[in-house]
Length: 179
Image (cartoon, rainbow, N blue to C red):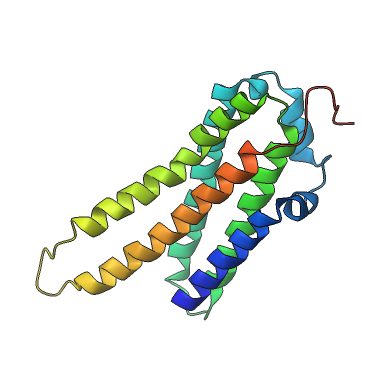
């Protein structure tokens, strides 16, 4: 499992290095981009950052509930499919938000920092739990809890970096219309 996690981390970081290729995977005129580019509040850095924060929380919550639901099923490797779909959905939403955004560089950066802070807060919470990990009862395995928290930290750190890079760096300007 840790090899799959690290491989996914490396693949995503390689994709972020070749961000132009990644941005071309999602068309500029998709439904989410068209909808967001038409609303006035989205061009305000604070509101769009809050929207991105809530979207990240929603996507993470859906993925978490889906993963929790797989614990009641005896289908092998279904959790890997759910995690892959969660990554694809997140990338699609972040790229669509990047396409719809026409703010200046400072506004895009503020939106990206505010929106991706959801994953930063999750990562910080996991690191804090790792540092303060203690057994409440003799049957609790601290090592496995540490490994689980470490994996969650890697996933949330990767999501934070990816969301920040994709939504902060944008090639559109106010002069280049969506049509």
